[in-house]
Length: 398
Image 1 (tube, rainbow, N blue to C red):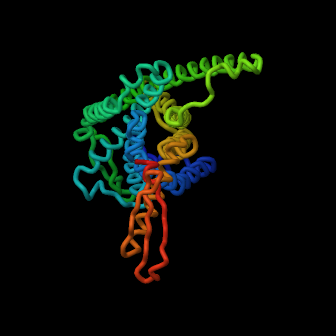
Image 2: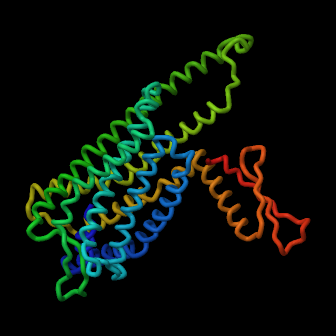
Image 3: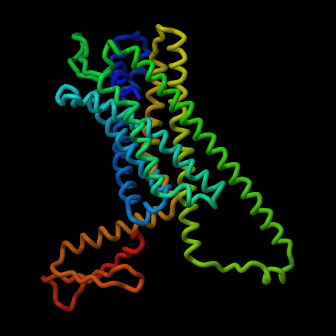
């Protein structure tokens, strides 16, 4: 993750390249995208990630190991977007904490790099969880418990702290040269430029080769297993269609308990949501990872490698795609996960009930037959016979 230094160089791109018409047009496109598109995507991502985290934090949702990884991904994405928003405010609005808060440069760099690292390896844990469930469901409950998932999330967080703690020593605050407006920016210290370059290349290898490579391998394995199961189920269904009608009455009963069906539906929703998010994550992040890998190879091969305006424009577009992936998990869950929609609706009903309670004098809450509660609310200013009823099924998400 190269937020501060890259953004600073990008802001001064006009002074380091030619002034041809094509270059001016490209610079204008980059400027408009940085000014309008990025803050919109970041703002949507900050709000949507917070909303999704609140829903997943409910009692019923966090009972599954898969939900633990979803929540960890949302938190990592939230921190990444917060740091990126600060960078945007610094470059576009001039609001910066670099020169006001001591150590903010090191903290922002450390947080951004750690969040970027975890945003790759938490999806690795998520796809590994779904891979074990798809291939070996009989041992899934023993291997992938929620307690072990939490421990793995904490372990990865500790690893990221150990890896990027060096930013407290290798980064510092600089100011733009005199011909330009004085603006603080965060960049590697001169004596540590070689060290930070090596660490940046190592980050590309760890996240690009190991992280994304593991995700792709596990995703292919899951898709192969799902394809095999689909073919097997289709063959069974086709053979049943060939049997005489009287044979169907002596077969396996079609009626099943509702509770196993609900659990199966919840698990299927988690798997579909995980696979959908992983595919979207790869589509939005692999291009930028490939771009960084190419630049790393060129930088190693040519010590004087320079970026032109075309490559800069391409990188800015790919950065926007990455921001989209960091803001998309809520919408993925809403579209493909019926259990998530159910819990979100329950939270909204409960919130509405609490809001109505605050507007009345003496609310009476009674349990209903469904296990939820029924709020019978009477205002003092209204006649004694008139009541306002509002039903909230708290049991839907607790």
